[in-house]
Length: 333
Image 1: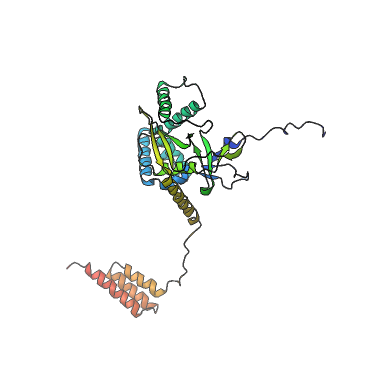
Image 2: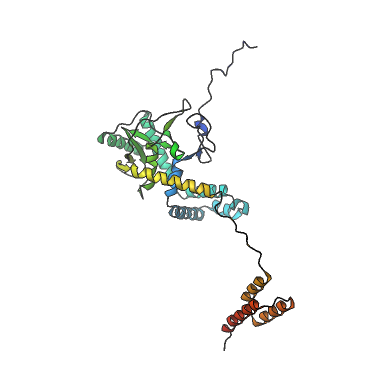
């Protein structure tokens, strides 16, 4: 039996990219191959510590209202949802995502994903003929923009997972051109480069890149850590522009974001303790009751109750006097 061949001897486990992200975290090992407890935070989640959450939630609320107004199915589902569903954050988020999709709020993200896929395919040397004419036109402009700026993409350096051990995060790097980290952006306008600078700075300070074929971390090529590029291909635009981004400042932002994330994490374990105090005395309880009486009759009954229990004292007499003064102000005439 020992002479029989082992069919598993020469077969390697498949790379874990199929389950790369679960629960919003990267499930990749540490550089030494050991498991990473609880996974790695995503770079996008880290830098979102600087996001304008108020504006984001307002936008999401508008998308939800638009969707519910136009979709009877969503409206009925919301009316029929029980308290268990409404108190379930998973149900809430799923409902919100459906609302955004129906209201068209996810159109920008969907467009960006398609454009990223097309650019990645271009770098792999795939034929662009199957793409729609608009996509082919923008890819041609993208290529000419790179050539005009003397930018040459490094082969195999597109859509790579980058590990930043100092900040305990992993992110997906769009591209490396020459010795610069480059990121493709497709939104129609930029509100701020604060988060973008932090994001690109993380990639530039990466310690390693994930090799999905071998299932191991490999060295990251040296890149500049003072400036990175944003290649802007806006939806509905007619040009591809290039922005230089200050990632020296971006790295400081990223480190502060990490401090905020760590601070929030430790705060969940509690930073306040109940200070035990002596129980409320009967005198305190009746003094509070005098503060709450709404009529002279109620006050007289309360005085009789205090005297009947042997609690009447100067403290309660003062409380009763304050109650009389308060009630007297409300007497008309």
